[in-house]
Every structure is written in C-alpha cells, then in structure tokens.
Length: 313
Image 1 (cartoon, rainbow, N blue to C red):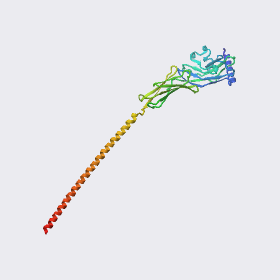
Image 2: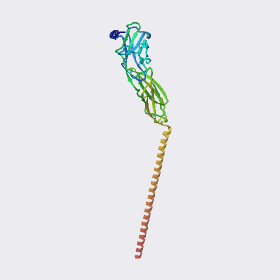
Image 3: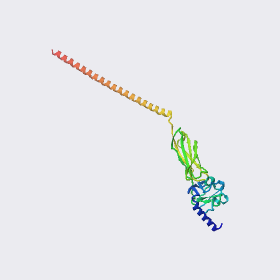
Image 4: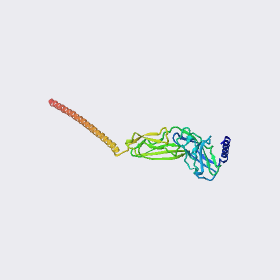
C-alpha cells in the first residue's frame, strides 16, 4: 500500500468516525492499573448499526492508537506485534458484543494507549476503529500489602473472624489468599467497578489459650512472577473464658479472707473485754481495800475516844 493510499485510508476512517460515530459505539475504561508480571483485563463492550452477527462473522483487533497497523491482538495471529504474541487474547464473546482483552505477563512498557477495531464480514464498509476511546495502562511495579481486618483481642472458646482482601484488575486469573492458622475459610470475588475486582477470604476459628500472644498472617499469591509485599500480619490476644473454677476460687478466697478477719476481730474484742474486766476487778478490789482500811481506822478511833471518856469518869 502506497503512502498516498494510506493517507486516503486514514482520512476515510476519520470521516467514517465522524459520520457513523453515533451508531458505532464502544465502552472502555480510559485508564487501567496493571501489576507488572501479572495480567490485566481491559473491559470492553461495543455495538454496530447493522443486524447482530455471530462471533464467527466478526473480526476484532486491538492496535496502538497512533499506529493502526501495530496490532497487539488480531484474529490473524501472524499480524500481532512480536512482543505481544502469546500474551493477548479476547475473553469475551464478540457475538455478545464483548470485546474485553486480556494482556498476560504484563511488561513495564505495555502502557499503550490501545484502541479497539471491529470489522464485520457482511460488507467491506462495516468496520470501525474507536480511536477516540482508547485505553492507557498505568504500571504498578510491585504489589501492595493485603488488607487484614480483625479484632486484636478475642475471647477463648468463642468463634473469631478474620478478613483479608486485595484489589486487582485481572478477573481471569484471580489471586489466591491463604492463612497461617487452620480454620474454616470462605473465598469470594466481586467486581467493584471500573474494571477493578476484589478478592477476599474469611477465616473462622475458635481461639484457645495457646493462641494467646500469637499472630495471624494472610498471604496473597498473584498470577505470574509478581514482586512486593505479599503478607499482612496481626497479633492476637486471647481473653480466658470464665469457668466454675474462675468463679469459685475468687469467691472462696474472699470468704476465707473475711473469715480470717472475723476471727481476728473476735479475738481482739474478746481480749479487750477481758482486759477491761480485769481492770475493773482490780479497781473494785482496791476500792474495797481502801474502804476496809478506812473502816478499821474509824473503828479504832471510836475505841480510843470511848476509852478516854471512860477514864475521865
């Protein structure tokens, strides 16, 4: 194809884009994050103005925005750029108007932007390149730490739940989450919008005293040779469950202490009463002694007076 013919073709495609842009439509995410060495899925859906065709009658391509003949995906695999061969594939059904593309083993120079092109085999004019709706990829060199949510303090004998999750952009190869502690695990995956997904794992187990002052670790494994922080760890502390011995021992200790204090008080009071009685007895004896002496003195004085009176007569 000559230079003039290429320019003419480009102008015709631009003209078609202006004229038929309202009936040829595509929906993509303008920007996507991708983890280097893993994979990314570029969500894509489209529609065209003619009657719906089966997948076998539709040709799909993804190409560089500024180089329409540099294909990162093509029905004819021989036309794919060498550094993309074996790394790209459509994961949607063209008959269902799904043009989503997976790029595997992402390289740090796979930034794009990339545009989708569709050609219908019904005629030579039913074709369109959506150069105004292309996708740029933001490269993430290393994975971030998974998010681990759980209560630091748990109760012995009561089920505890731990949650670990990561976000990613490759639903065709979901990351896997594993735990350092045995228990029941429930994995789940959900689309959170704009081509982003969340992988989640719930761990449930019943803590024992042996789990006190230990830790729980969640490990994520991505598709491909991804580097980065693959683990999240959290310490756990176990509160002992109240048992009959936990209730009886403090109760008996309290009763024993109260009994001991009561006995001490009893003996102190008894000793105090005995002391008072002894003092009173001594005081009474001293008083009677003094009274007896006074009585004897008084009687002896009366005797002397009587004798004096008798002598005077």
